[in-house]
Image (cartoon, rainbow, N blue to C red; front, side, top):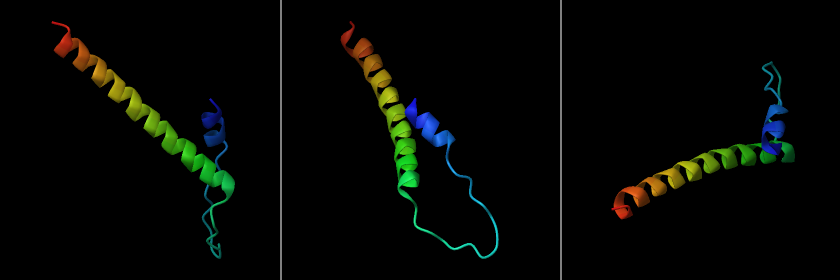
Length: 61
């Protein structure tokens, strides 16, 4: 997926003295959004499985 490719290219945080804290760039914001979107899609998938289970158990008989 495109999200996996963008997340793979995420910059590594460097640790050193004298670094200035900077504003997150547009690319960083897009990567964070895609990561949160991935977690949201996992939640939706689990919710759908739960709903199918409920439909089978409650309305199947």
